[in-house]
Image (cartoon, rainbow, N blue to C red; front, side, top):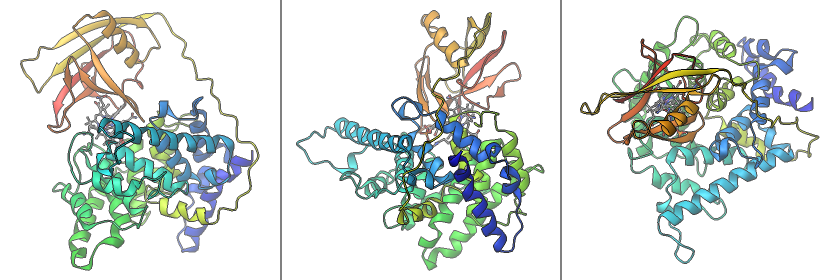
Length: 461
Ligand code: B12
């Protein structure tokens, strides 16, 4: 019970701080109030803790950094209270990064006898940035991480943009957020310029779609880097800063939403980071929209959605690591009592009678590529991803695919030998049914019903 109370404390503290500034903002209290067990923040953090695996990682080691970051943004005392599972989770994060650094050094032909060169690190920039943010939020010195200067590595790796695995401004913004909240905390003008260069005429960014996820990350990064902007560049900076803010605000609907619940949470974080008046961005409605999307179990659809939404439930954003770090200095916390038991018995899905679905592969980029449709039969209750695996087993050379694990589950990286191309920006997307509706989640999050059709559509962005 102790942890529940603690988790909600930052909310209460923050809302009273805001009130002391003269604004009345009850939205967070409404969400937690006296019933802290049911407050969205508590429910979400408890769910994330149930997702910790037997080796103390999250999502096969893919998501430990984003979970640790989100947990710390939700409540900096999570790490400082020194709960055993928390410490093991953070140790696991360190091991994962050390393993990635070692793998990367090996791939670069760097063995134990040669000097490790930071330029050779091959961890994608977005992932490295998330590691740095997670480590910073848990009181690590990222300029000396077991002898590695992660900040210098990040700087060097941000030089070549765009390139494979580092080709969108969501990742670039994460890089800037990490630079801005680690090391000397100064962001070089070239990084700020690059972020502004990515803006389209309306202030939005590529891949924003109906939401404004990329613009939101960019605005958080720009807000964080604002202090590094030299006077001579300030008016240019402000013009562009305001354009991105306008992009986000222009996408907000009457009910406070900006695209789906994830986009709404990121937009809210961005507008909070940019100090926009909560009345202007309909904070209460936006929060309500986010709360309404929460599952009984506390998650927001999947792990990726939950970690991205969590900070705003604590009235924080991706630029709040600086604030969270301040607690490291006051680290005289006592070891805590037990943490809530994590429910490691993964929910098992009941499988039903056999159903048949159609999987269509359509290529709008290479027109000579024939459209292929493969029927697959399997028990109701399997996810679309599991149907895809079956399709690959039974269809001979008609259908095969490759995927990689991410915070949001399995991401299709190649189908029938055609890979996503991050340079030409041609990618596999998922459309559903005769209406060809764009899927709102990936193949792990979709549970097909008999007769459903899924179109894997290769298109240029
Ligand atoms: C850029 C982007 C894309 C690009 C990725 C290529 C590129 N150049 O980077 C493209 C356009 C290909 C894309 C496709 C899709 N995307 Co997308 N994408 C994003 C975005 C804006 C940023 C991702 C990123 O770079 N993260 C930063 C890095 C550090 O993290 P990362 O784990 O390495 O990122 C990789 C994965 O996120 C992966 N990825 C991207 N989208 C998706 C979606 C799913 C379901 C999965 C499993 C993985 C995945 O690509 C990233 C780059 O390699 C996010 C926004 C967000 N809020 O996260 C949406 C987002 C992740 N995408 C989303 C969706 C729904 C899709 C699609 C299913 C859309 C569709 N109908 O086809 C497809 C996935 C199809 C597939 N192949 O499996 C949703 C996921 C929602 C959910 N509840 O699961 C998000 C959150 C947007 C949103 N607000 O709804 N996406």
